[in-house]
Amino acid sequence: MSQSSKSPKPQTPASGSTTPPPPVPTSADVARLAGVSRATVSYVLNNAEAVRISEPTRRKVREAAEELGYVPHAAARSLRAGHTRIVLLPTPNVPIGPLYSAFLNELQWALRRLDYTVVQYGSLGLSGDEAVRAWAELRPVAVISLGEITLSAHNVATLKRAGARAVITLGPVGVPGAHALVMDQQEVGARAAAHLVERGRRRIGVVVPEEEGLELFSAPRLAGARSVADAGGARVEPVPMAYSEESAAALAARWRGLGLDAVFAYNDEYAMLLMRALQDEGLRIPEDVAVIGADDLLIGRLLRPRLSTVRIEMPTGDHLASLVDHAVRDPSEVTERRDLMAAEAVHREST
Image (cartoon, one colour):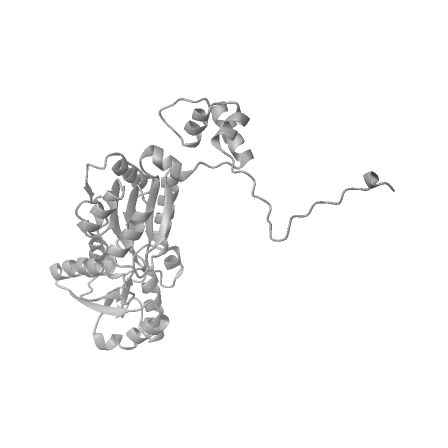
């Protein structure tokens, strides 16, 4: 057989070599495939509101981008706009219940619909200054602080120098220079105490969670309960308790010695733990001890006796996202809103 008639051997890459990655698709590639200009691609994929583009053209551009696997370059878009679209949401370092978890999820979806990129940042173990410097490295357009790290006016100024157009605090207190969305936790404690006082209870325990960080919520709830109890001739006593069966059992074991005839148990989860422990000690609910929680969780209605609670009306994610968007668009107007949360006691069998 002649040399020319032999089948060519397959080429194999040399030892240590790798196949080069495919080229990264560009907006020019999307424009060619969709038959439009690069400017049109930019307008469509960046959701530009100032330019009118027909829906069929938008669909062609999106389909072309999906076919090619093209995504806009965030850094390049930020350079053109002068800021990112990142809203930084520090991950809470404290345990939060289902009510607040659902609220935060709804907020993130609403921000995404407004074309913001929500970045959750774990700041566990960082001080205020350390956390703020770490957040600033991402150049967020806005930061929503849930109060898990105490911010100062200096921290707010640091974030704004790094490009943040708005710093929003969501919690019981505001910070100078930031937009304050104040959720008055005192109202929760006040509603719980008023409910108990109205039912003739005069020696009220208020559970203070031992978990670190929850004092942001528990301290104002205790203060609210105390103010109502004082006005109604009742006595309030803080009762520390951790979120564990052992801690609840230890508190229940010494309950008779405390001389308390009612308890506001911080929230429904602590209330359920304590109520079961009190029952295990032979105390009757509500005859010996009236129990009320907060958050109005479904499982509280499934207990026997059914758990009284304070129902908290949170702002919708859409409403809060629109407030964030307004703060970004008009950073010069620093505001404080205190009408974001309402609370009402719900009477059930445990009281």
